[in-house]
Image (cartoon, rainbow, N blue to C red; front, top):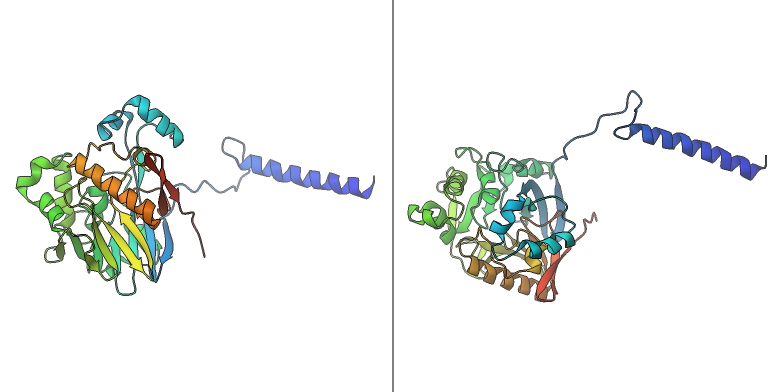
Length: 331
């Protein structure tokens, strides 16, 4: 046998042995003793970038899952015929609406601040991992000096306290707009909450352990809430709902709370009202204004329900917009 033929035969034999070993390890096939078990759930997840001198770390808290029946309630202006091609466009093969839940950690060199802080499994079973992700990222809850709330919905604020007694961030000041704080704490406002008493009780549980540590601020464009972090009003989802613009060394990132929950559907149809908004018409105004600004300024953005790893840009697409994710980068 010629040398080249012999070499080919040897390679084929080796590849065949390797392929057999791989096949034996696949689920549903016979595996040799000693093959390790599947690893199970993902570990705490985080991703980190720099915006000027500011270190911005996304922390994945978990996710939310709706049902097909809930789509019409969430988008009351839609029809099944209009929703179907948008879901197809997003390769949405699962039923219902799905979105991640995240938080954003800022190390500015002067502050270690969280923008929103996730939820808890007692309210949404698939949330509540922010503290684990924070520790995995190299920081401790005790080091956080400020929690900036876009609004006091449970998947944004219950990370403050799971039991209504313990401060998960024992050394932090909580910053929220005065309007949003009043909306969730004033009994006269309870009838205006679309989601009802369960959301009200969760909001009050989240902030209850922080007496004397809550700083309410005016909902004013450009208000500097901590050095280098500026408030951007976005009312409608709740009366005091806001975004935060982080600026350093002529670079910026806008981090929103609930400008959009669904990055394909809502960006394609930004003028559709949202059924869970306190003021749906105002919510549309805030969404269109924010998306237009991001498309025109071409700055980086992030959001609590933005697909992982949580950073991207907004561009125009006909009468709507498109989300262009920023790929994970490691240098």
